[in-house]
Length: 135
Image (cartoon, rainbow, N blue to C red):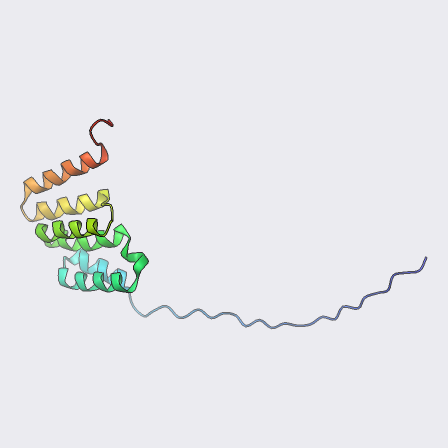
């Protein structure tokens, strides 16, 4: 029987250029700077960085952890009034406070010498976790 024709395959070399990733930015990220300012209780710097992040990153703006990081600054500064206003602003932005939100609000109240507000915040946390009739 006749043999099928032999197909000749030529090898060709394709040189791929690797995609270069941009170098990481020098120094810490804005989020890291916000966390550091919040840890120090530096509300002024934390507010600037928080608003910068909200304006530049819509996806991050809607994340509770970002708002809690700003709340951490108020708590470490012992500024209950501003912390409570921040939580209200968070709710107006349609964000559901987490247990960490309540914890930071309680911390702000305690450091500001507002024991009653700290206890009220604890009760609100318990009620939000176990509404009446669901226990």
